[in-house]
Length: 105
View (spheres, rainbow, N blue to C red):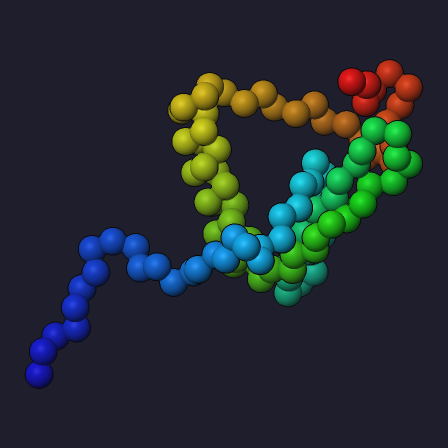
C-alpha cells in the first residue's frame, strides 16, 4: 500500500469566477456580534447623500473572523513594507451625512 502524496505548496481549493463575482465598494464597515456570530455590514456613504447604503452583509463564525483578522494584519504589514506606513484614521463618532465643509471635490 502506498503512502499518500504530500503537497509542498498551498492546495487550490477556491476558484473565483471573476465573470460572475459581484464587487462592492465600501468606505464604512459596521460590526456587530452575538454569542455565535459576527455580522459585518459593508456600506457606502457618498457626499450629498443623507444615508449610508449597505451593499453587503457578511455573517461569520467567531473563529473565521479571527482568521480574517490575522490575514488582514499580514496584508497590511506587507502593504506597509512596500508602500510605507498607513496613517491611523481619526476616531470620529458615526455620522449620517457629510457636513458642509467635507465631501467636496
